[in-house]
Image (cartoon, rainbow, N blue to C red):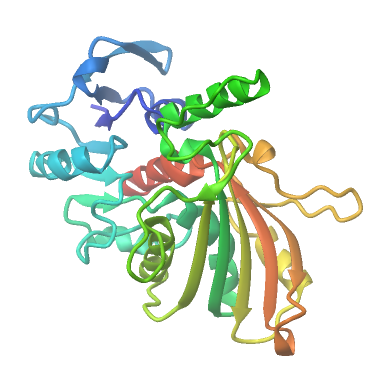
Length: 334
């Protein structure tokens, strides 16, 4: 009998992407339960050529479930993920709820699949910006250890869900038509604007998104003292995050060496056409599995040739969330 997979938050932006990826990767013949809040109960979503009715999430939803992928926000994960694990399901959680718990693996399959062996029923999916950055950084770190990362992000509306993407569309139309804009999902207008990531700023001056990138990278790399600093910004892009990354290496390294390493890295595609002026763009990364890497060049400000600059784009809904979760599932089932 095929395993039983539950997708929690199936009607959200990441949940609907999960349904597509389950189809694409040959898992649609599994027994699949689609779970969401009570207001989505009765909706029907197409998965693998069949329509499946969405059921309301409750404490009995995980009877007989083998695997559960959660993409329904931190509050529901905090409440229902332990219930699912107690019922015998292996939980892959997209929220930040469990990421920094010492007994919960935080996994990007291309980087630290060995950590999956240590799970106790719950596995955490990293933050989208963390995944996009480290798909490009880790292959280099393995060859020439990175000593410092400076990253600035340009994060799409998709990172805040389907309602945020709708708000960007609505505000853009309103702005072009000269109508007033009233933000509801974001704290500021997102159309034709950018602003500091809409998460609280702590006493150290870093917002929550920036702290996630720092803390999660250290955990995934098993490098607790790795020097990282981040600045995270929302931009008026529908989907696919972009990041400017500056690296300091242990030993000198050239841009050509970086290209050679990344050319063989799984899940990475080099887009670095200097003559044609073609480099990573979110419009090209949207809907794609690979993280695009370009603008690869030596950092002239760093001594001894140990600095590299690069620019990356990755689809927040796919590799930054849904795809990474499914790849974890694939590792679990062998």
